[in-house]
Image 1 (cartoon, rainbow, N blue to C red):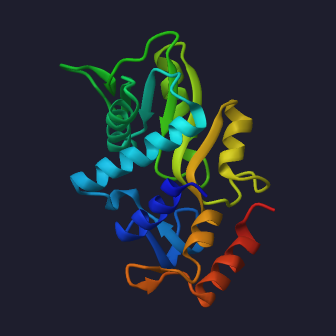
Image 2 (image 1 turned 135 degrees about the vertical axis):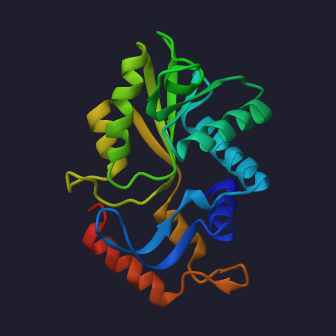
Length: 225
């Protein structure tokens, strides 16, 4: 596993973004882990987060694209932070774009924040996590309605590696099949477990044998076979 991925896993834990316990997800599933990107709140955290996204985007998709699109609301700071990091790390000046939840009818009108989308733009979508793919279902038509763009891929921070709405493949795999673009993550939940199992982080073992058994049981029920 790449060094930046190991660092990112520990960064999520230290930032109180990746938590372990008992959580009820929007889908109704009872999960032994939960990720909330809204817990990144400081300038230092957002700067580092942007760098991790930038490295993952560079490694997965390269830099041959024009716009980083972050769906409202959590995707807005992600797109800004990653756009700045790509400029700083790789000297590539790309544009950021996000949507509003409500169309603005005065001043800077329309549904978009940041850059307008233009015909021929190559776009990468950036999100925090995708469990069912519902957010892309909402985002895809918004992007395609703005201009004749090519969506090159989706980058999320964590691949939960559980079945999507169809019940047969992961949400990221479903997105690829439905929309025709690659979907990837900075790290997978398998990599998280591999890195944290019986390892100290923040002065304690985060995933012990009991928690690992609960995670294994969760994936027996909801994991991709």
